[in-house]
Length: 143
Image 1 (spheres, rainbow, N blue to C red):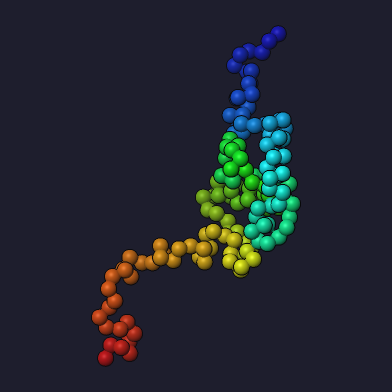
Image 2: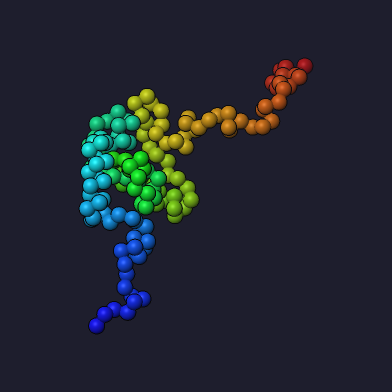
């Protein structure tokens, strides 16, 4: 006896439900994954830190599993991929980004939200854009 039409799930329905356009166990994804790892054999995040770690997982840079364009896929090692996924899941739950720990080879923090990596002019108060005060701001200058 055939299933009722409202209970039959097509591949498109499954993809819509899990947000993926390529099944992770499908041939198309395996080929795309192999291409990404062949072009980018080292973990992109570790490479920024000056480490040489093989990439063994493929990540969607924009966290959109439906965007399988080559420019959106990056090779990462398992710890970096897990860390990135955890940060994004935390953001989806709380609306706040977790700080990214560590520094690059030049000593600059990896966290793009760290105050060293933000534009200080954007943080300047609008009141500071005016002319300099006529008298000094220190108490000893006010005599």
